[in-house]
Amino acid sequence: MNINDVKKIAVIGSGAMGHGIAQVCASAGYSVHMTDIKQEFLDTAMKKVAESLTFLVGKGKITQEAMNAILANNLKTTLDVKEAVSGAQIVIEAVPEVMDLKKSVFKNLSGIAAQDAILATNTSTMSVSEIGSVVSNPSRFIGMHFFNPVTIMKLVEIIYGDKTSDDAVELLCEVSKKCGKIPVKVLKDRPGFIVNRINAPNQALLSAILDEGKMQPDELDCVMKKMGIKMAPFETADFVGLDVFTHILDYYAQTLSPQYKPGKFLTDKVAKNELGQKSGKGIYDWSSGKAAIDSSKETTDITPLHLLSVQINEAVKVFKEGIATSVEDIDSAVKFGMNAFAGPFTLASGMQPEQLTGALDYLADRFSLDILRPEPEITDGSFKTIGR
Ligand SMILES: NC(=O)c1ccc[n+]([C@@H]2O[C@H](COP(=O)([O-])OP(=O)(O)OC[C@H]3O[C@@H](n4cnc5c(N)ncnc54)[C@H](O)[C@@H]3O)[C@@H](O)[C@H]2O)c1
Image (cartoon, rainbow, N blue to C red; front, side, top):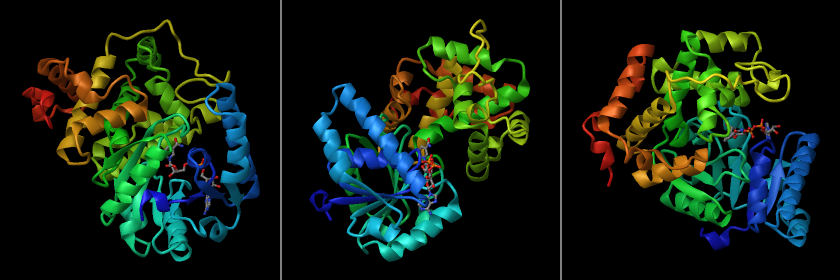
């Protein structure tokens, strides 16, 4: 199959990610059929797509005629999954992050979609190979990881499962580009893929800072915000939901290192149902709708440089493990998947080995986290030339 053969895309699940994926595919001219388990979910999804397109018309990004055409011709909904996948060359799944649910969805899809249709999962953490183990002809099974919000974030990680064909990867890269996205290939199906993996040790560090209790979360978040970061690290944890944050750390503890295990502060919060924005209270009070961050506090203890050092160190590991094709791809993934100013290797080029090694050893000692120890390439300075 080549890009010109792709006419119809089915989207399974119309939640936060599904409706965004449907919108960008329909806006690129594909005929999109989206399905969910309840009509009210599909209605809410279509309302959100219409609001988003109206916003784009207001900004002059698309014309009113284009919006009308997308809604009238390109994007349809149905409760009948068979109807949704009928005639589709690509099926993209965006149902909740539960392994058994995803497997049962794909077991069904494998029987009802065309035998050569590409079957893609939008999982953000779980093993693509394991999800795809239930489909016939697994060479067409692949990870297609969009970032939230889909209409804004440019990155799509295109992930190889252990049986995925090169053709399927190339095709989804082309389709992503046609949808205005920047695809980055993920060569190995490892936890967190590229972007979430590079973020992972900093998530463990945040949990350790909360447990240590010496520094207020406000102090670090304030400094990050002053640097122009829209959503600071602890605020992000509350925004994502401390239940989701804890679940992700648990997953990394099982798959990467036991040191990722979420700490007492986070598990206590989850037990008390203080989950962050969605419950009105988490690390911060959210009763006003926004995180009540005390902006009078700033830390000189743990700084943005520490967090950046952790990212650079993890990026070196990602490259050495062969997860990405090149350091340029890693930089692109972080830049477009985190809306960062630049990627870790670009930022590292202006830094000295002693600076990074000092910061990493300090954190590893203070929080008893060996996952933060500097890689040999950080200590000997070869991080500046690795992969180049
Ligand atoms: N939200 C994010 O920030 C984000 C970012 C990247 C990837 N992801 C991944 O995307 C996937 C979806 O996440 P989300 O945030 O959109 O979840 P969500 O809960 O907002 O939406 C999931 C939707 O799937 C529907 N659904 C459940 N079972 C279904 C079934 N059998 N058939 C059809 N639809 C079904 C639900 O009714 C719901 O509308 C997850 O794997 C998640 O890890 C999420």
